Length: 346
Ligand code: DOR
Ligand code: ZN
Image (cartoon, rainbow, N blue to C red):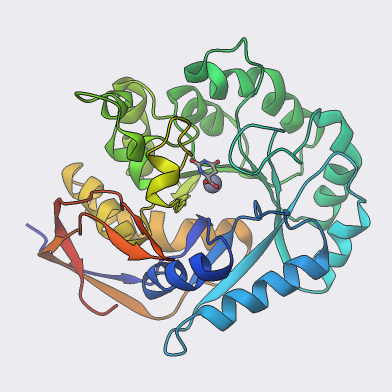
């Protein structure tokens, strides 16, 4: 049995850090484990200009513990009327690493998102030219589509077409939740990859309704049936370089989660890598963790691998019931549970 794993420092290819006090109080959970992180731009207002990306990066760097060597990778937020020059300028100035497609009203702070994919075709054209990746929240938003079918419908209605129309565009299908998404990604070329969260590897949709409504297990895309969770676990632990780590850690104050209209998002940053280690261990695939966590992401983005290492040991980690952050409480993923892995040098 493997009791100690030494792997290259991982990166997190999908993180919500928020802003202000929340940013200050959550960023070091991520920075302690990960060398780099792709920072989601769904602030209020969203990060739609190069200057906003630069300023947000400065605020993040100011909040990071100075003893940590952490690099935030900034993302621009696509809107219906975005000027394609922002793509070239954002890339040339070294501010934006990628751009994010939020279908309008698909999730938290997405009301300024894209109402019709055709509206951003000129921007996608420029992104393909500049070889800057498109990050996709892959859900259709029509109210007549069942919430559990929104990802599969997005593949049929939108993503398949975008892949055809822009054969050279790099695309990350973010936080995939279905076997349809796994199959789609496997059927495409090397310019299409996907991230998988720790929570979608761990819970299925029953967890949202276990003995009552469980708002802390509610996120978007919503967790699906067990068959989908099993497909995600197989994909993540398969050693395919088309699937890599992206936590989608998304902190919300307890009162915003435990509400008549609770926010979507799971705060998994505190023990993200231990949670992934749990899955890979259960799937007898600990030897595949380093590729998923530390190699396939940077290779896809064309970035160097991290040089330093983290050590994971088979040693219990007690996850707190609640964390006192940003003048409120946040319930972390695995709250009150014990994980069997601990990062010993972070
Ligand atoms: O659950 C989610 N929370 N999904 C998203 O797409 C956004 C995120 C957030 O920002 O809270
Ligand atoms: Zn997200």
